[in-house]
Length: 384
Image 1 (cartoon, one colour):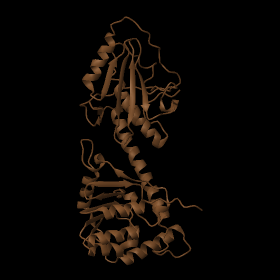
Image 2 (cartoon, one colour):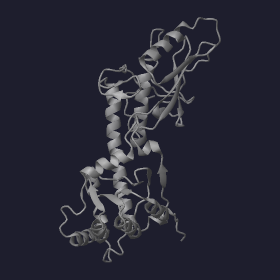
Image 3 (cartoon, one colour):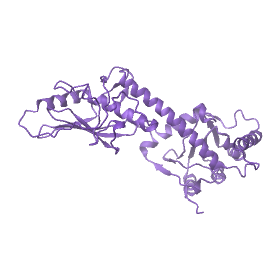
Image 4 (tube, rainbow, N blue to C red):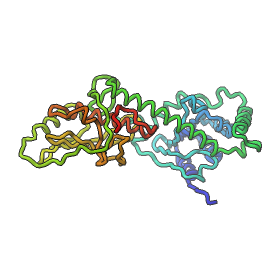
């Protein structure tokens, strides 16, 4: 059997050796003795070494080396719960060198991670440092490390705790052979833990998405000028509606005319006065075209295009990500969204895209993200 080897251990070793001032490591599981040994060497050489681990008991496999790192003036702390089910599990994987370079990914600092397909890359400055959009990993690390516990806090006898952990895991999994620190199935254990974390994260994401989506539907949440969803009535409120079944598109071919395009001008002004994340323009044939991007919390980033022609209802296309149209997600086969039931709601000249289409589109994105997680459309709908 061919192993899927990578050279991330060597890359990380080179990163550690490149440090002249400090090394910060945040990782759920750290059992790779070679990497810990490099940190011990650097701590002895006067480099400031800070290691942040999860409270998972797997890290006890290297408790003697962590003690040695502490004795070399390094710092080792733990954050969160040992159990994924209790929440607060520390799942970050990152290396920060001299507060200037940051690397991270899916690579586990375990004994056998270099024999698997993993991902470990350099983060750009936007991810390292704070910016207008989010806090950087450096700020996050410092915050987490400040509130973390000493690694050996509440562990009076690490070796006894380790043996208890090994025995318990062997009993839970039904291993016939005695499990020791030398033959412990680390990757199997980590895979189980990550599967638990994925399931928990999926459940939490679904709950958060439902709260946001239902909030927009029930009008306790509104769409702010920047497209964000806010838990108050300061933005644009969604109007009652039902997503439609998606069998037939309501697209009419716009024809050139010599009209003044008054309604397109009106819609453009309303959109621009309510939202600042749209780029709107009126084409020569009078078609109003609005494009933009939205990324509600816990969602992917969506690029969209809205087209409006006098005498027709607006149509909304999701340009990115690519989505296969299907009735159950309320997308017509032509690729536009089914935001309302035409038998229930009639689009009139006075109906504003800003007040109806935009919040309905935001709702659709939220319910679609929820559908990806649960396979069920949770929004108000009329199913054919």
